[in-house]
Length: 127
Image 1 (cartoon, rainbow, N blue to C red):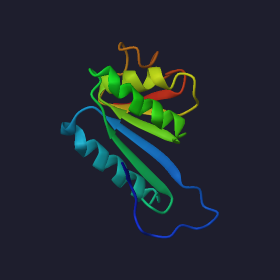
Image 2 (cartoon, rainbow, N blue to C red):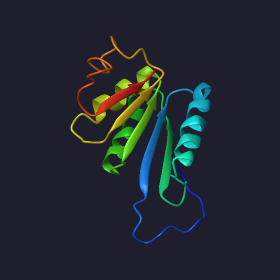
Image 3 (cartoon, rainbow, N blue to C red):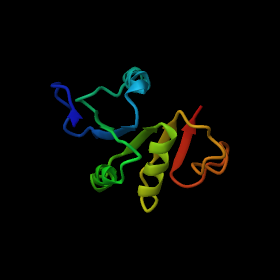
Image 4 (tube, rainbow, N blue to C red):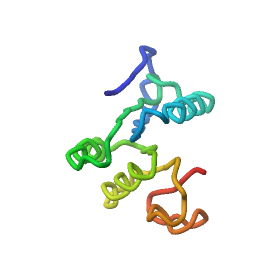
């Protein structure tokens, strides 16, 4: 599902596609905080940014297809949480340059990053 606004965009302005992949409804406040922060930085939904919200169950391998579709759609960024969903996104984007930001994870010691100072690859996290 893509949620968009009705405001016109400038013809030469890039429209960023951001996927938000979450595993649990209980963390909806993270999504709200992220989109509010983006708005404060000038990224207006429907004008210069579109959000693709995807809730997955990492325990159901059949849902891997949903994340593969995001990769095929060449999103500009993936915000992901909690840890299980983040690990899944990391695995499925390994051969891409899509930046990944994960939230709600013990940053070191879970195979997401080497260290917070040197995460490696296309992934980093927020404590």
